[in-house]
Image (cartoon, rainbow, N blue to C red; front, side):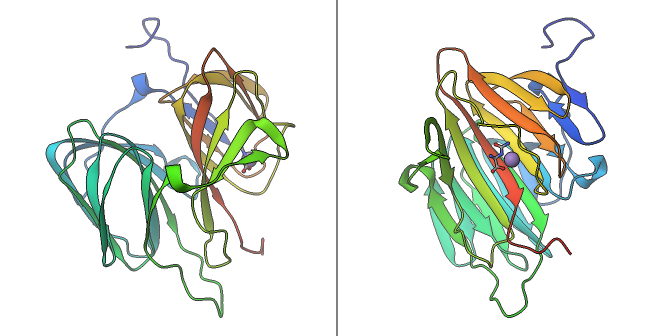
Amino acid sequence: MPELFGHTRARVAARHALITPDNHVNSSLPGIAGATAVVLVSPAMGARVAQTLLTFETGGSARIDAGESQTFGYVMDGGATVAVGAKSRRLRPGGYFYCPAGSGWSLKSPKKGTRVTLFQKKYAPLPGVRAPRPLLGDQSRVKGTPFLGDPAANLQVLLPDEPAFDMAVNVFAYQPGGHLPFVEIHIMEHGLVMLSGEGVYRLEDSWYPVRAGDAVWMAPYCAQWFVAMGKAPARYLYYKDVNRQPL
Ligand code: UGY
Ligand code: MN
């Protein structure tokens, strides 16, 4: 429920957006059954990535042929069996998969209420470099590093840092009071979901209180900064486009 009748913290601007859980409206999407799907970020708002939140009922399923798009999926809570290419595994919270363009993925036997965040992006091939393979992973097995040497801002890079990948998906964990060291302005675009905790996100010339469940889109060159607040660490999962020439 919105905090105040007729009000919302959400805002969709030309070059950034904040979507809060009280704004969610479901889409019906081919290949998704027994689940709600909320498309939080998409080309319809000017983005070059799609970010979708799936919430599964018991018996729900997904079966998607990726076409030109690649898909990264992250299990936020619950659990489900995911198959990608020839690989299949039960994923728990923090489990993730990567499905390259031209391949397919499926999800079955979800626990009731399982939430999965998807990032989908059209793949930009790199001449002479073989496209990425399907991948299944677990965040708990990924080593974190202090961001630019700051132990209050820990970064986990979930996908291989290799030229074949034109997208990165990372988890940032901040101790209360931890923050990005400076206001970033960069060519890379972000789609983001707050996994836990709370803080303040600066997007262009606006400052937004954000908390678990909020989704954010940052267009290329959107000025951005974050500080974690509250008594518990704040964590977010985010997408960025990487490894390609600007022209
Ligand atoms: O990877 C990044 O650009 C990251 N430091 N940006 C962000 O957290 N908004
Ligand atoms: Mn950034």
